[in-house]
Image (cartoon, rainbow, N blue to C red; front, side, top):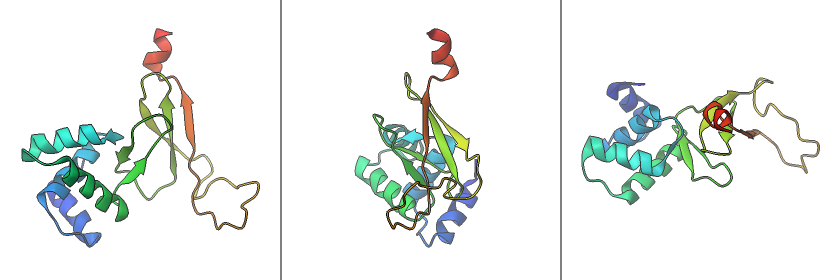
Amino acid sequence: MPTTSEIEQLLRAATLRVTRPRVAVLSAVHAIPHADTDSIIGAVRADLGEVSHQAVYDVLRALTDAGLLRKIHPMGLVARYESRVGDNHHHVVCRSCGAIEDVDCAHGSAPCLTASDDHGFVIDEAEVVYWGLCPDCSAKS
């Protein structure tokens, strides 16, 4: 978990102004892996007090556009945000409870998979989502 000073440095390096909402949102996403917006809003409000949903959405968009966050949206689940960016990893998602974990790519650098037909596209990333049951849900069934 980065310090406030390190978060401020990340924002400056991405040429973003350092604001309290940006620091709070980036801190929340670092603290809550694969956080949904409601979790992020709750963490930001616990840190700053009242802040609008729209302000958090705007900050999430700015941080994602700047490459400081990654937005993932597994089918059937709400969008999630993560601070692990710039590497080539995938996700495993529990079909029952929706838990999400990171999975490193087994084949190295991006795009790590080769399409059978690229249709003329210049492919620079491959996203894989593994689906199954997490250990807790698997034990219950």
